[in-house]
Length: 174
Image (cartoon, rainbow, N blue to C red):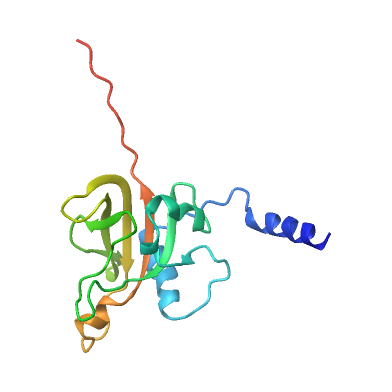
């Protein structure tokens, strides 16, 4: 009997009717990631802390706290090799590949963080096939000039995972 009540309580807590979690880049960096890095609690666990690289992207929605089309995670960015600055972004079935350089995110005129776009590839590097899975990886800018490049490589990131929607055009009939 007590087990039934617990299930009912969890069901009541799990759903927030009408709630949509759709933060801006500025909110992700200036509030959520900054609070995580500064060890300040957030009342609702909207963003789970997991090692996203232990999952393939299609498995991540199941472990997310919120989200229908976008899923958010705190993740420590690891290194590919012990003394390397290159991040390790390999998963069980493929890898995440950066599509360009870090783009600064501004609040007023201040750079509050960096955003990197990545695409998920099935298979191994050099032989992988591109998928529609995308990631925006956010990180705070480096604050200490004394930090070594390897220290800068192991930082908290906030990752937004989503599946890119491809639109097929109907052929024009002349």
